[in-house]
Image (cartoon, rainbow, N blue to C red):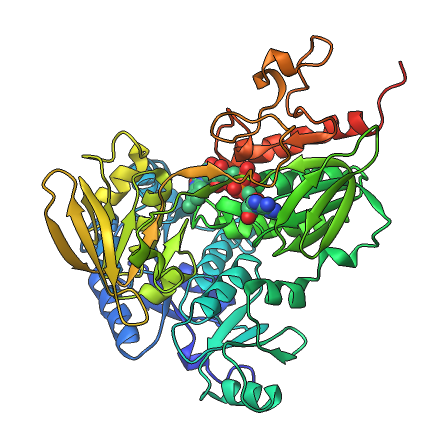
Length: 560
Ligand SMILES: Cc1cc2nc3c(=O)[nH]c(=O)nc-3n(C[C@H](O)[C@H](O)[C@H](O)COP(=O)(O)OP(=O)(O)OC[C@H]3O[C@@H](n4cnc5c(N)ncnc54)[C@H](O)[C@@H]3O)c2cc1C
């Protein structure tokens, strides 16, 4: 079979071009190998074409529309198309003859998330800026569609399984293309044949096509990415970075780019909280936003290019500070790392709900922090997001692309005190998202997977059972600090104190530590784990970068 055998089933790009069809078709000519380019001339025709593609089992990757349409305003058009296909990316191309007027009219819609991007129609050949934006949108679509096209790692699982879901989430966040197969599929049968008699599920077929039965996500991490014990034990690295969220990743990029030998130890996948964010829209330099997963994967690749060594799936269990200039020792269950300087970048974790019947379904429809990859499975179902912060708002917007209904559930009587206004406005425009105030989750039931939750009114005490195939819990954060030694000063909640935040009785020679230095010489802290930090991606990565000059100063104090 040739490479184009399933051209007819290629995902569609629907052009809606009442005035400039020839120009747009010409422009999208370069995508015909991978996409089915359909040209329409009105809102209704595009809706009908999308409907027929979906009815035939096909996919629509993107709508590309002119800004002026014969049968309705462009924002209404997107709302109508969204009811037919919710996941397609939405691009407006503005003809230069009415660029100024239409760009101004379109701008408020972008802030409210009514479409993904607006671009000036190309005026000549090879407008690569235009096509970079198109490709970014398509790539973003590709990473959220139900069935990934490429699978470097295969998971064979007979049904709903918390371990299989955990493995898939880990691989997604590490940017490792993966796909789950049932045992009776062709791929499943082939893997089982290689696994030998009586295999335990889930089975994983790794990058090298070896088949094994992991008992934890870490087993997969070790197979794919190695262990800290792989480092020669006698070697002392310049910097050990603990945590690979934005702060740790930035510290790694800057430290290794400046010639310091750098090791990063990460308990889960790279990206930290940011890696679970479907779309970071306020990070400098990404006007169309960037998924946290992609930002993290790029940063990891960047750090690797400069020589950083990553060990993912390894939680640091303790830190033994070096005395009198000796190296610090960072302990993990997979080996120790000895480092002349340590950057603590372990961020925060979400609070637990503490309802046993709900905790029993974690990984089986219940997710803490985010449900980026699980969102695909929630297509057509009823989903509940608990929490009133920005992360809850973002999760609800992302889930609404897939779910039949999304309910944001909060104890307070509204979202205004806890969520940014731009998210509240965006949610108000999404008919599938409702907000249920003065409510809390007190129980859950289901056969093998969550199916219903019991919700209690905080004022009335009345209980109600709601259908719920996905429960995303975003309940506020507490620091990952249990592994830190007593001598490292922290505030009452456990956040690490640095610089002038350290109480004066812990200063040395009447001077506070440097801005990102802790009370343990040679140990620095960056990002959300730090008391008084801003709790944003840009701030965390800024601190990760800023820590590096302090590390240099510690490693090579100026001759005085
Ligand atoms: C869903 C969501 C959406 C968000 N959206 C935005 C947004 O749009 N814009 C914005 O500016 N901010 C956003 N934030 C906040 C932002 O993601 C955080 O401020 C940022 O990620 C903090 O980075 P960090 O590196 O300090 O910590 P984290 O991102 O928390 O990373 C810490 C890392 O350390 C690891 N770790 C913890 N303990 C250990 C251990 N003992 N050993 C090894 N590793 C360990 C963790 O697994 C984690 O990967 C969002 C947060 C969430 C949860």
